[in-house]
Image (cartoon, rainbow, N blue to C red; front, side):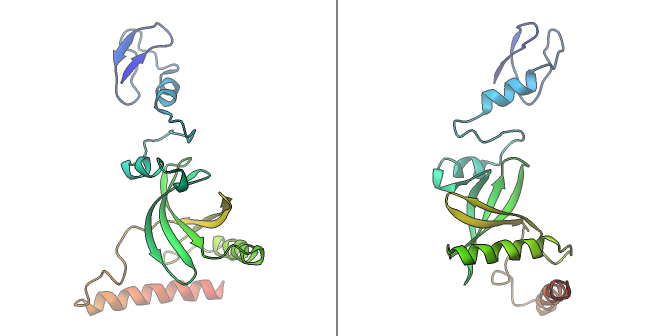
Length: 177
């Protein structure tokens, strides 16, 4: 990318957050690079976005406030869970979209989020926020990288039992609290 120093006017090819090769000034270079890279959607680019998030943002249907819905992780009786990108904090999150959109149900979702947000346990995904955007309510949760039990080999019974044990410990902690 071609960059021009706001201090001395020198132009150069740059990558990342370089200092000016002539005056070594960093004043304004970071802001200059960010504004040059800012897309028309207005979402912040304070950290580099993963390519999958950049592709997903091209579809306006994937933009929910500061979150970009990227990939469907699973469907259940309660709704859909998506991998998403938090554009402000620059991190992967899980976005849980309930199937319902009734006012009483959205209040229940908010109460569930408040209760879950108080939990802190290694086997319980953290709840970061309860959001309404594009007319939809959803939870923003900790994204946990890995495979599902359905994808995991049935040959390693000990490993499967340990997964169930970890899940049970998390559920027991949540129940007590």
